[in-house]
Amino acid sequence: MAPLEPPAHRALSGSQEPFVHLCQSLFGTDIQSLKFILVELDQQRLLLISGGVVLASYKVSTALNGAGNRNDTGCTPIGWHTVSEKIGQGATIGTVFKGRVPEQVLTEFCSDIDNDSITSRILWLAGAQPGFNSQGSVDSKRRYIYIHGTAQEHLLGQAVSHGCIRMSNSEVIELFEQVEVGTPVLVTFS
Image 1: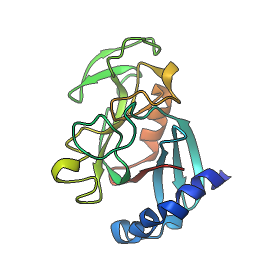
Image 2 (image 1 turned 30 degrees about the horizontal axis):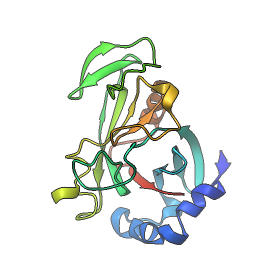
Image 3 (image 1 turned 90 degrees about the horizontal axis):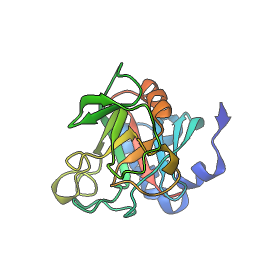
Image 4 (image 1 turned 180 degrees about the vertical axis):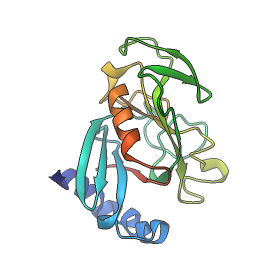
């Protein structure tokens, strides 16, 4: 296990200090004691952190339209979220979900078709900050914001999604097994 990397640490201090302070009131613990997912939009990277230690680092793809919390924008919402539902336990790698229901299985993960396929596993995010990323016109859960596998693995590391956080199919399965419903997720910039 690697110590907390400097880019991740910077994301948790300085300009992101309000998010760090919210951690105690939202989750009942300080950020250095928390197991959580950190998504760094500018790095197109997702980190799994526990007790200040980076357990895993993954290349992701977030929204082509950038960051934003408003409904119907196609943006990736920022701030604190939680994993509200885990969908796809035991599904074959490459399973395509439509409406969170398994439909078919893909065997290739470099499609040039921009169909935003949701594959392998789904971690459905719910905003944890009322008025900022939950409720009303800024509700991440009602926007169906997921961490999920993709049929476009060759585009990971680029901002090309429709708002969700895309991962490789093998890595989303790995992450799925390491988190529980209720796991905090902080989406921010490094």
